[in-house]
Structure formats: structure tokens, C-alpha cells
Length: 232
Ligand SMILES: Nc1nc2c(ncn2[C@@H]2O[C@H](COP(=O)(O)OP(=O)(O)OP(=O)(O)O)[C@@H](O)[C@H]2O)c(=O)[nH]1
Ligand SMILES: [Mg+2]
Image 1: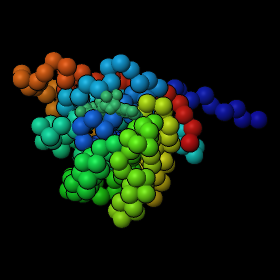
Image 2: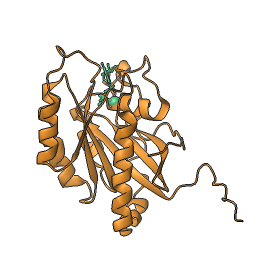
Image 3: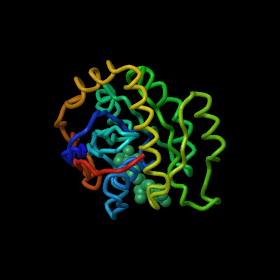
């Protein structure tokens, strides 16, 4: 009888590039830290400078999908840097915060930027973060998020990076849709792999006027959290 061949821990079927986008302070970095490290640390709250990078591999309906996840800076002054990272991204996690109306209004403008810069095959999921807040603190209703997502024909999910609620589902749903698109059109993978790394400058200049508390992450790829396994 044949034995299953043990798979190397770093093996994967597809590696896909994913961007986390959205206004500053909506919780993009916290979402990534929760997903990759299961943490919501004391360093939370320091604005990202440029971009940061982490990896995580999901087991998705028999395929191992390695997500190369780019956490981007939401601050306007980094917009031109962030724009250089869309190329080859097959997944986009677009985040707003349920207690920040402006971040919800700005979703439309993020969607335009995605339409202008990302591959047409990119899968977008709209994520409403901070559901741990009280109903009094909530400003954007779940139904408004749902309607907007429906209008743009994209997935919608409400999450909390603080409690971890629905964080894994977000990335599982995204990975599953990306995997399905790749299986339908394997050429997407070539496009993705040829542009997987080195999107934009690896090391960017820090703004000398930047407040020291903003210098949380190095500009350019940072932590590589490799190959944690999950099932979807
Ligand atoms: N209550 C609550 N606060 C959160 C949650 N996620 C993030 N925060 C808080 O929101 C603030 C901003 O979080 P970040 O993850 O740094 O936001 P960001 O979107 O990465 O911001 P930029 O890097 O500037 O683009 C911090 O004070 C976090 O503690 C959440 O799920 N619930
Ligand atoms: Mg950040």
C-alpha cells in the first residue's frame, strides 16, 4: 500500500501576493499580526511606514496556498510608495473601521485605486474591523458595509483584530477564491510569481521629519513569518 509522502514544511502549491489596504488607523497591521502571530501587542497603534511583509501558508481544499501578505501604510504621504505594490497582487484585503465613518466613505476611493492599479483578476474582500467596540461606539452599520460590498460585487466580513473574531475566515475566504481563480486560469500564477517579490523599492528612505513613534516598521519588507499551517 502506498504511504503518503511527507511534505516539506515550507512546500506549497501556489504563492500569492496579497495587499492589505485602507485608511490609516483602521487596524491593518493589527489584523496581520493577529492572523500571522495571533497577537494584539502593545506596539499596536504605531503607524506603518511604507510597507511590511509577512508570510503564512494555508491548507485550502487540498492545495497549500502560501500568502505573501503586504501590510501597507494608510497615511496619504505614503500613497505613491504603496501604489508601486499593486502589481501582481491577486488578493486585496480592503479595511475600514466601524467607528470611523471617513474610513468607510474612503472605501470608494480605495476601490478606484485598486481598479486602476491591481490586476483585473485580483480578489477583493471588504473588511470592517473593530467589532469588539460597543454598539454606542459603532458608527458604520454592518448592513451599510454589506450593501457597499454587494454594489461592487466583492466579499464582505466584519472582524476584530483585538479579539481575533473572523480574522482567519477573512484570509481563508480570500485564499479559497484566489485558488479557484488560479485553477480556472493557471496563467495568473505565472503573472503572480514573476512579480511576487521586489514590488517597488525594497528599502525606502525614511522621512527625516517623521515622528519617532511612527517608525514602527522598517520601510520595505520586514518580518518573514513562514509557513504556519491552517485548514480551510
Ligand atoms: N478596539 C479595537 N481597536 C483596534 C482593533 N484593531 C486595531 N485597533 C487599534 O487601532 C489603532 C490602529 O491600528 P493599526 O493596526 O496600527 O492601524 P493601521 O491601519 O495599520 O494604520 P497605518 O499603519 O497608519 O495605516 C491601534 O490603536 C489599535 O490598537 C480592533 O479590532 N479593535
Ligand atoms: Mg499599519
